Length: 237
Image 1: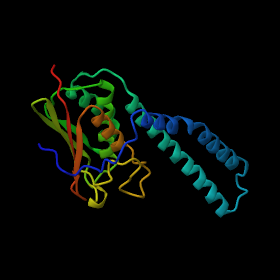
Image 2: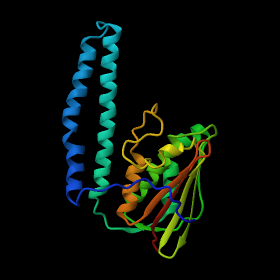
Image 3: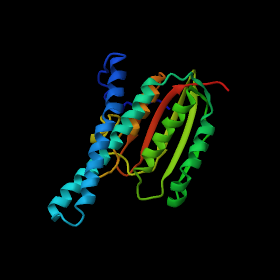
Image 4: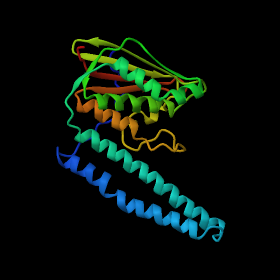
């Protein structure tokens, strides 16, 4: 299960420390002014209920909608900041238990849609438990956010090679247009401009993987689903 060569462009990171400070500043210092903007827009909507002409009401709706979208983007930056600043000690984590627990968490979506998450016998990994959970949560959520015509089926399979766990997370969703593949791991890049999603999950997943010396790539094509390939440090139970 060799990792394919469809990784996103990595780009240059800011120097260690400066990058963390930048993330912290953006994710925390912008929250209060955004809350004020959102609150005043909603107050204006309440005060002018039924008094605005259709164009003015539409502009106000756009303002509220985009304030809420920016709020979700800042929350995503907060999550990314937490990954960057995480200092938990790596532990041996059972991927079987993680996937089974997340299947329970997603049960509302899977049962409602007639979908499922299935797994093979997965090897353990050596990573902070909370980050393993978040990694697979983001990958599963990305699949459920991009369904195809059939009920979503997510399959997780893996094997070990020397000190690495090589993992495939495969779905039968709508797939990704090839023009987006080199940007798919970039923050706030979406493959569907009409989507309400902000395009942060795969970026955070990549940060988790790379923080622990792993690799993440994917293959996808329209109508053929998506397969994410992970190489993670192997644990020993």
